[in-house]
Amino acid sequence: MDRDDHARASPEALARYAARSDARVLAMDGLAPLLGADGRLRRDPMGGEGGDLAFLGLENGAPLFVALPDLAEQDRWAGRQAMGHLSPAELALFGGARALVDWHARHGFCANCGGATRLAKGGWERDCERCGAMHFPRTDPVAIMLVEQDGALLLGRQERFPPRSYSALAGFVEPGESLEEAVAREVMEEAGIAVRDVSYVASQPWPFPSQLMLGCHALADSRELTIDTTELEDARWFTRAEVAEAVERGQDATGFVPPPRIAIAHSLLRRWLETHS
Image (cartoon, rainbow, N blue to C red; front, side):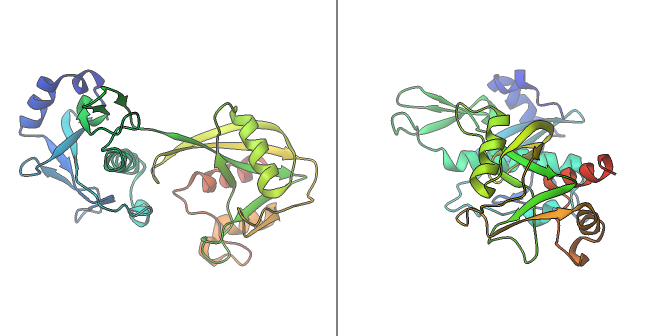
């Protein structure tokens, strides 16, 4: 996917792209994707969309857009179930489009003066018609971490999780914090555990609505938990054997149910098993 940033800044180039016979619009139902008979994201021919379009980029050379409808309400989890059936490339495309559509639906007015905003730069900016302030799609960094102590992992669950499901602890990186500081603060706040030797592992965009999950690993010297029940319903230490059984059997695991495969928490668990034999 070529995001073609130079074309975003040129209304003439965007108009030429939209007029091409191979131009397509990513089909969505609000914030959820529409899939074709082949199970892939549907890409419809241009025509009759009405309203604003955001330019996603060039997919194998063909212009691809997404419509920006007026959404009175946004279902926070719309599209999550469908994500489990998409390939990594399709998942990335949908994630970006969903986050962009959701952002536009939420930012029709200027945070600076309250004036109406209008689409700019191919949908990657909104400008205030009153004071001229420029607004850009936001990405919120979230630290998500596996905490290890003597061969066991600390995992937690929130009340909204499915039964028996546990996952890595996570929390937003606050202004003025480094990623390492955010990891240490979140683990202490949620579980009462001090951690050290924080290391970055990998990242994953998570469009619910616009997070960037920053996967980390940290070490703890104690297993004495003090759980913040306003944040977590439960937190527990799991042995390597328990983690391996959960990752291998999924919903059929006898101990706990791991996070879904589309989530970076699942990848963190798999990596830990592979590197901590």
